[in-house]
Length: 151
Image (cartoon, one colour):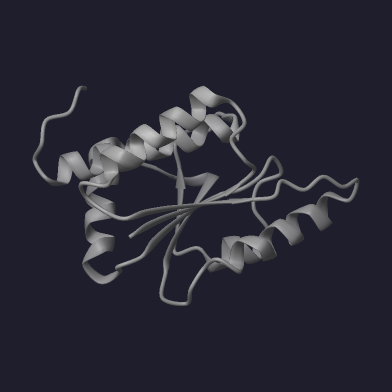
């Protein structure tokens, strides 16, 4: 099972439709659960990070393999990501991807992470990044099943 924990809700219909499309495509390979958590806004950024982090951690089980999306994380090609996902699945039935809010992730969430992944040193809108991540997860399943996929 793949679980995606995201800070913030999708608002635009076209983004929601893209997520639905990848949910449908991924259903052939795995169960997918997407958890949207409230995007907090206070003057105190450390309070925002802490509270968002606590909210994220409530949805992570002790047996889950957690991959946090962090700009400081490791960059992988699609093939390397597919191989990584395949090797993780050998010993872990639940893989949790975490996309933080606009301030990133709390230290507590980073410490819980089993693997830190980055897609780029660039900053992406969190709503759009969710779709990019889902596409790469889908691509990884296609690669790992020796199925063709548009390059």
